[in-house]
Length: 379
Ligand code: CAA
Image (cartoon, rainbow, N blue to C red; front, side, top):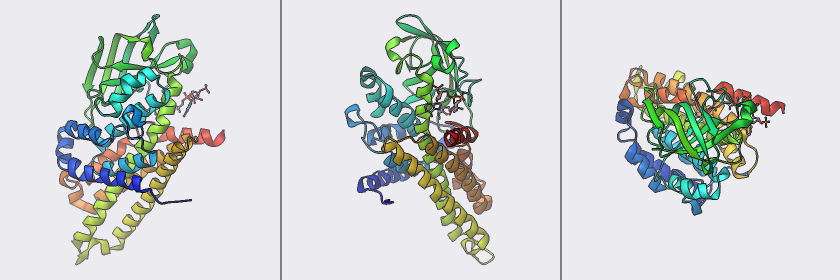
């Protein structure tokens, strides 16, 4: 067993760290405050290759491994989780799903612009009445011969208005249950497709979360991903990979919380000494660091298995379950360590605490991760 990163992986981590410090840190508080999408920063991420990291270079990607992706996600999320969710959805849910399951023609048309960052992608599964219970899709894709007629509403869609291409999950053969569901590629601007209201969120406020409405949208048959009825399995498989991205996002929020807490506790004095000299603070720091290391190892193990083309369903669920709890706990402790300063906007940690919560909810709640893990254990 080898715990060392390759030079290439370290170079990716350092490039992501530089990008986060130089391009994301300035303005991160204002973008959060104003719920302002990081348009320029995302464009730059595309130019630097962070939006299609694992995609084969022949489709415009970086050809990197999933370990490099985890390292980059951690660095970017340490500073700006609103931007890292754009990166995670585009890399894992959209690009990886297309590269693995789409036809060559779909890859040429859609994957290349998504991997190079010319377009951003969105993954549309959740509905007003289908969140955790993802098989209960009410959006319909009626088979009309050479096209599908798409009708329905999707909710809480990341990159909802900034995306150019959307992977939409919809029911075609209701009587077949989850085996009657399809995944369709929808383009912004198709007649009958409307981007609905922007959500006002607790955290990741600079990310762009919308409802989407489809009314009699004609989707050409060639935009279906995989065989007829493959849509639900496609969504499940893609989400298993996506959970590595969100676990790494949570890891970054947690490690950002620790870094700021270490720095602050060595500067702030109380009762005549730096607060880092008080055992009450030391215990918090040591617990944060231990959980963060464990979360990082879980993320890297899931990434390693994915790179080895082995099953990683259980391991990515474990990584997300543990890392998201670690992010929540570490960010709460970071606010506590910062005291009054932690409760105000300038010190970043209150944003980390608000941002951490979503990692326990999206791409499968912690309760869903427990179900996935238990099912795999009991197989
Ligand atoms: N890989 C491959 N196939 C899978 C799978 C996986 N990980 N998980 C399930 N399946 C297959 C099953 O084998 C089954 O197929 P067969 O009948 O052929 O065996 C089929 O899918 C249905 O599975 P279940 O019977 O287990 O279905 P279920 O209704 O009990 O639910 C669930 C399964 C795991 C709870 C699923 O509904 C689920 O993951 N829910 C959470 C959905 C979710 O993560 N939503 C997040 C929204 S996306 C998002 O947040 C993106 C964003 O913008 C950030």
